[in-house]
Length: 154
Image (cartoon, rainbow, N blue to C red; front, side, top):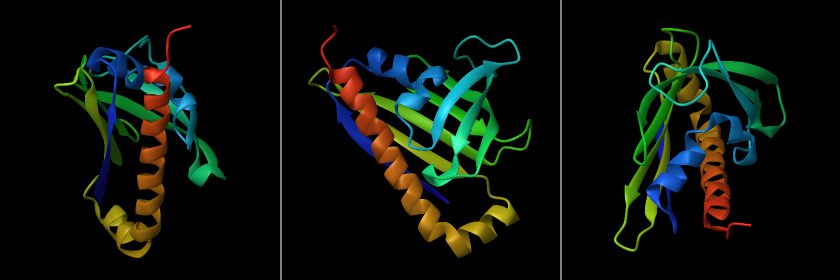
């Protein structure tokens, strides 16, 4: 009930982290979450900061808002958040940025579903399809981040 994708980016870990940790930019990268906004007084990434993502499931629908909370916020290294109502996380999304000797970084995006019975049943029946969608979505997200972070400044 988890998977990950890693992409090498020719950019500094800090530049990459600035993109993945600014949830208001997610619509540029994600094939499913087309916008997000900080909530409950949050204005940027910090452990405990809350935001909500506007999701178009499978790129087709249904369309809904998902409450999220930042669980890891280590500039230049890691950004993670849980999806779901307060204290009832359904899924954890994580970006880990590993510096490489060439001055770039390997960026891993991953998800981990909560080990609760309804999700275990869902994954047993439809996990093959949703897993493929998540994997393709993570690849697309990282490829779009890579394109932006590697493009020359205007």
